[in-house]
Image 1 (cartoon, protein in one colour):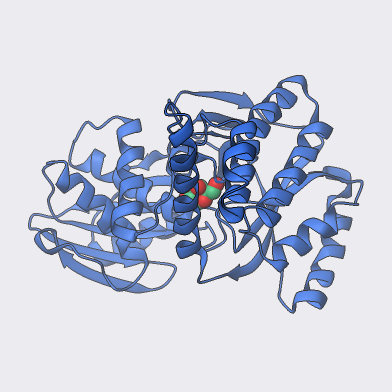
Image 2: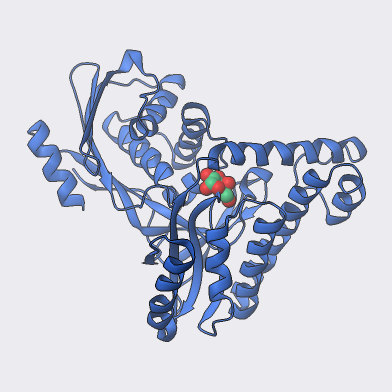
Length: 383
Ligand code: GLA
């Protein structure tokens, strides 16, 4: 893939580029907890976005998306939403640097990769992080990694308009081979937890659908959580996020006044605790208990947080009774995308050969399957 991007750059711009690589991510557990100051357990994967870049001597920006065979041109003084999708992640990232007062010039860029788009593997965060990492290098900005992560998140929030948390960009940049990241989204302290299991594969089943509701419903969930916090805060002024709230507060304060807000906050408060407990399971090597928590998370996401869909539920219901599956749940923002499954190696192929036709029969859609490895985060790979 990197060679393809490099060759394309050379054929278009006749010079050798710098190339950055930034991966997509999985998340084992801790879903929708990042913007509630809770814990998440993501990892970077072996599917990545590659960005080939070289500064120009003027202020023009010439971009090419190799997977889509599309060009886009603009100027550093007139950066605005492109009306397409892919340039916005690059332009939004650049705009954050401008806002922060960094000296930016024009550049030529080629973007591409093998993170499936719209599958909930954070291809957008990977584009933002690959771009920011590249700008940091070619314009010698000296920005530290955590600041880059925050700028990438702001690009998503302000330019793209999704009010997402910090998990995706953090995982893409800080990912480490064969490790998951236990990230405290309140303090941003993190630790790596080894996750290389001899007999178990991480398998993603891609529903092949992306509901158009995803970003508006995402922003709505975030507002509902904030409403819940505001209600609790009236009684407990020291509660600033659902991280500070207890299950008892949710029961006593939210349940009597608002059924929807109650169910949203119920899920989050329990998911934050579940994620902490799941990390203890991992440390103890108790995968059975870990897997059960994945199913519990799915139940909450589907019934209380209501961000699943019938295709995701189908996939989890299908694998649950299978002895080869340790745990499974929908992953990411929801309303489509993938389920994440921990599957015993020796049962993997049989399961895959059964689930593909069943999914097709019940949903009239083709299921895509990715067996993923945990990889390093954002890096320069040549130039
Ligand atoms: C999306 C967002 C993340 C996170 C997840 C849900 O991937 O970008 O910040 O909120 O959804 O856990």
